[in-house]
Image (cartoon, rainbow, N blue to C red):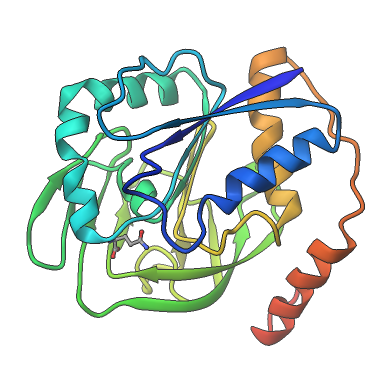
Length: 245
Ligand code: GLN
């Protein structure tokens, strides 16, 4: 077994150590004897994305999110949409998450026409949402508690037909008002959680890996790992946030 992971826009969307999520996914596969091949696709790379099982898109500053518009317009928008609709797994963080929507208006008022895969719009603001936070995943994503770090000016409001990734327990999440965090659509996981989010949320990581393995091989099991250090990091943050599992 092997998963082919594509890191999209590592040159412009990669804030707060987001690439650590790829290192975490690679190690949690290799510790179970499952192969993992990672390909980085920076701006302007020609690739139809059909050869990958899992995609990662990190976060970015407003101006970086405008830089990639030409690449989206050159065909990448359709490639990403086709992969998402084909049930491929995506982990999209903050700006990478905003990219899944119809568009993003930066804090300076510049409109970014995004992929339109999902029915939501993000409105930027200079009043940023920053801090450690926690949310509970929806049942379709395992239902566990995720601890993370958010730093975004964007306020995302999901369309009525969309399922949030989870419910905010502490912090802001999508917009600091409706109690939702992120989005879950088919095997697409969108979240505002930087950090990187996966190392201290091993169950969340394994759920994402399983979604790709099941789609590729029709079924898969991930043997339990010795996650004492990972779960100690989680418990430390849960205690700091006064959040219980
Ligand atoms: N620039 C976007 C915002 O401020 C995304 C930020 C990020 O990716 N951390 O909302």
